[in-house]
Image (tube, rainbow, N blue to C red; front, side, top):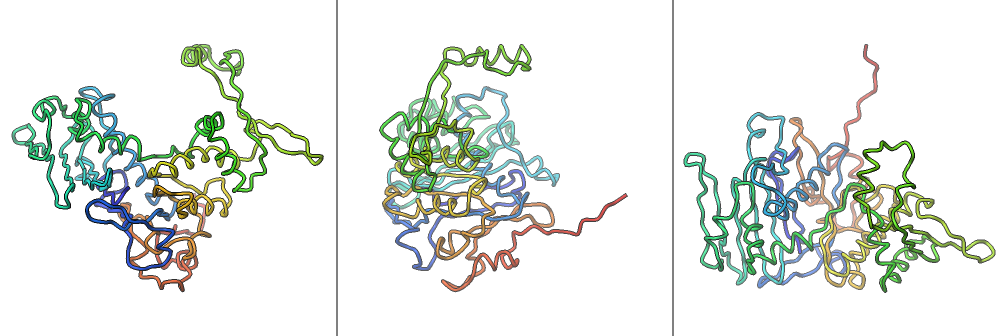
Length: 423
């Protein structure tokens, strides 16, 4: 379960911004929209959060920050080689921050233990790395690593509660790699659950969502009924999903593709199968009519692509981050997707959803608690600020959140200027 995420000096996020999924005061929708996570001390958390803000306000950069943190954890000790650049981009509109490290910190619970893990990094090196664990409620500092410019070395502190081949792991950690990731590659059983949380539990949708491949794979197994139930609940009027497999054929590629590119594609897909996804509808006289998935509307294609990851996340208690959930979806479908997370029957393992959106029809107190709404906006220096609706103390059950937002009470709206031709 995710408790909190902080980021500083990453793209438009100049100053430290902290985003929390901790339940605030108030009993509204507590049975559906919140849950208790046990980790010696109990934590009251929310099951979803929606982030609003104007285009270019920094919403996507906030999600990119989480994606960058995950990527560095998973790849710095395996895929990256010595001298390779880390995927961080500082706030470049200030000469001080442009050369300073980006910083990431996250607090989460796995196997009933709370962890607080973070690091700062430039493209060329990890500058700091720290890890606190709370297996008995009180903090145990397992790791503290700080780069010292004067000595051109790291100062290390590996706590007594961290067990294993600590000196080997330390010596094996490159400047552009995390100690956490290196130690796990060298068989640290104690740190493995932390790494696995990033690898398995934290799920980031690609821009525009997912490809339909995973949903299609479920349709080849017993989970097909779940996919059909998902689509039928969303009123898609699809009677069946058919999956056809055939060998990849280079002759099916467009004739105007350059020959070198065609050769590369042929090599990449040699001996692989291509999925052909078809939907079945009923005609007026009740007979089945088969369509290719790409003949369906953009919204139907997107919802089918969402079905597999959504079902998987809800079944396994994953944490989902999605940019612009509303894209190509009717407002009622957006509400449908969100409320699957707010239902204990469909979300028995307390999966969490974090998404950005411009869809304001769901911005109301019948769908969300006040602590589930966040905003992103840029200040006069073009730096992004992330802040919760609770900063404005909206009246419980009475304030029209959509109207208040669109009227500018909470900020995070685009400033539209009159269009005038110049020159």
